[in-house]
Length: 68
Image 1 (cartoon, rainbow, N blue to C red):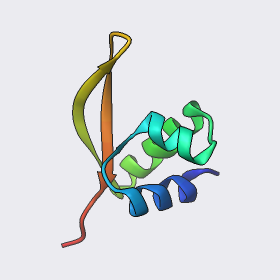
Image 2: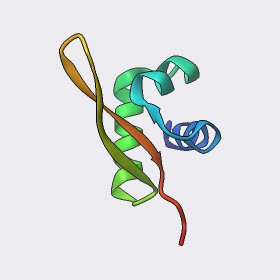
Image 3: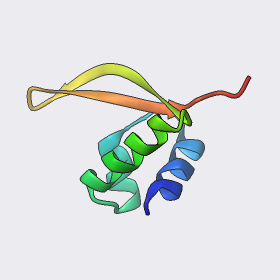
């Protein structure tokens, strides 16, 4: 449901955090997470690794998979 909007945000903004997508788009964090999981399963995006900690929780970043 929110997957196209999340994909469009990543396409426009590049490397970003799940929470940043949620804040910018107004989509609930759990819905952003579900959309990112779907995009990961489709091979459309990459999970780039754990890059920072928020309140003791590790947070991953995401970006589009480059064609080629």
